[in-house]
Amino acid sequence: MVSIQDKIVLITGASSGIGAACAQAFASSGAKLLLVARRKERLEQLAAELKQKFSCQLHLLPLDVRDRAGVESALSALPAPWLGVDVLINNAGLSRGLDKLHEGSIQDWEEMIDTNVKGLLYITRQIVPGMVSRGKGHVVNLGSIAGHQTYPGGNVYCASKAAVRAISEGLKQDLLGTPVRVTSVDPGMVETEFSEVRFHGDTERAKNVYKGLTPLTPEDIADVVFFCVTRPANVNISEVLLVPTDQATATLVHRQLYSN
Ligand code: NDP
Ligand code: 8X3
Image (cartoon, rainbow, N blue to C red):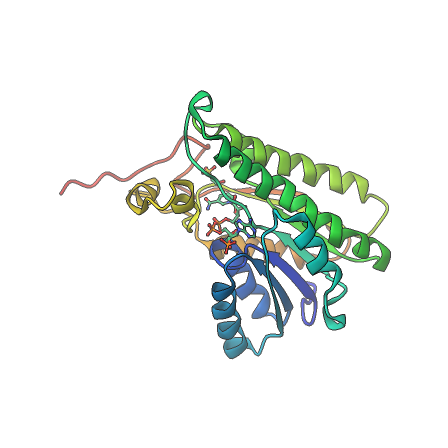
């Protein structure tokens, strides 16, 4: 295992779920964290916790990854100790709605495409040139089983994650000949705020997504991200598809039925 001590790790979508779990995993191993999300107060809470638990060095970047000018100015004006990102975890993302395509909300589509695809690209474009010129770095993109298989109502979300998959493949090809590594971590069902966001705050509907089965946890995903990043420099784990034991495909899950 390669040490992550004092490495600079930039995590987008760190205010919740998988991003917050990645922050915990990397902080506990001595990394310095650059944390991005829109909800500043959530980032501050997490930062206070990580400082207390691990004496972690952190720099918060409260921003919307869809805001191209905001991303460019925040990342090009990083304080000197935070220049030189070693690991970029492109995790910020969301789904909105589960409507049939011909009945879907164009606003929902734009939010998903702008965040999952364009936001990821804006951040990557700012960070990867420095990795290339320094001759080191690792990009981890959070894809999804939805980028491998389309499910009913998944249409535009699945398309956005298929795009992430293509971007990861393309980036790996374009970085060939440099030491910069690229990994796509593609989970199935993980219980986070994801379904609540998808259903616009309908918590009951969100809970039902995971009812009767044991989903993955954000920590399960953070474990895999951490494993990929800490392999020796000659090893590039290009893609990991991980699902709960209770899930076989995007649509085939095993649910325990309870009678009460
Ligand atoms: P959460 O909703 O718990 O977390 C999403 C994170 O993304 C939040 O920190 C949110 O922060 C951030 N985010 C969303 N939009 C923006 C934006 N415009 N700018 C900056 N940050 C943003 O969901 P998950 O942890 O589950 O999702 C993380 C990633 O994992 C996503 O890319 C998702 O598609 C992917 N994924 C999730 C799966 C699941 O089943 N949960 C399965 C497969 C993949 P804030 O709102 O504060 O900006
Ligand atoms: C999130 C998992 O199955 O809802 O990417 O698409 S799923």
